[in-house]
Length: 310
Image (tube, rainbow, N blue to C red; front, side, top):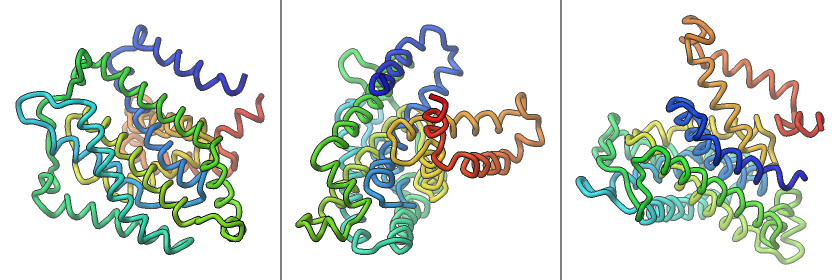
């Protein structure tokens, strides 16, 4: 029954547009995009044991590639733009991972942060992507009858991307490759002693995680029609790390639940109609205190609460 829950949730999400308002549809799409982003980091942190503080670099690169490669007048191709966003993010992940994976622990965290900040300043301090002002997507891409500018079409495109990402990672966890990553997370030295080239396994996971983050960046760029350097900042890396911690490390469902909880809490605390003008102006403080309370009371995350209730 537990294995069927994600697919039941996917079917419910597929039926949601019939009852959602335009505002709530936009909010759900945002949650689904960040769920893809959170799943990409879950592959690194939860499945491989690599805590990265520079994951937003691949997310932002995917978004920028989407806008920079989009034609100015004619709509681009969804598949080509998504593939390009994932490919560029994966190539940068290959470069970053090849160097950063030679370090461990806090040094690995700092190296990934340094590479992310380097990418951030490339877009922030140059006119490559419009500088600090960012750039706009002129025409949303299409693929046959699929129109990225149609909100209903785009909703199902994002949902399909999330289902494919979740399903692919679920299969990966059960594969030999996934078991090797789990072994590396638990005891890398023992895995090396049994003959595994742990460096190559970690590099492959790093590149795949970067590609999935690039996919999430592509979806966000099409959704908003605008990108800016903040998508590559360490704040974004910290936010997605909080999502998987909030949901529960080591669980794919936890990454999705954490993305939904974080996005909804942020939306709630930033809305004056819900919390008042004063708290809405200081939503970062309120959100931070809430997450501290969750982590203190639920060390296994929200997925742990669900399992305890069941």
